[in-house]
Image (cartoon, rainbow, N blue to C red; front, top):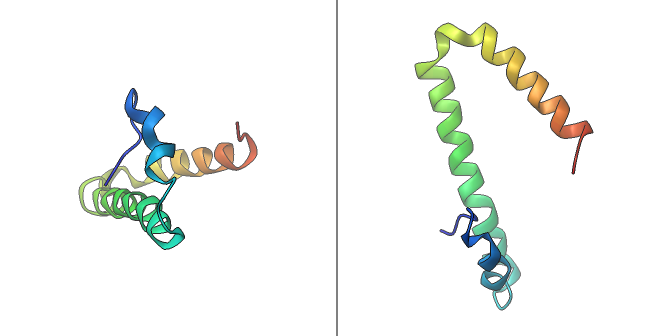
Length: 70
């Protein structure tokens, strides 16, 4: 899996140029889904005692990401 971290983010468009659409979809979705599952496991099993802080923080981040898209 490729992750577009700097300074390698310049090569990300070249990866998808000749690939079929289904392969591109898989390469785009799987890393994000994996990080989401990892975050949810950390949230529920490690940081359960800080639920009241993280819930408010996540709600604020979601609202900012919905309304302030760059």
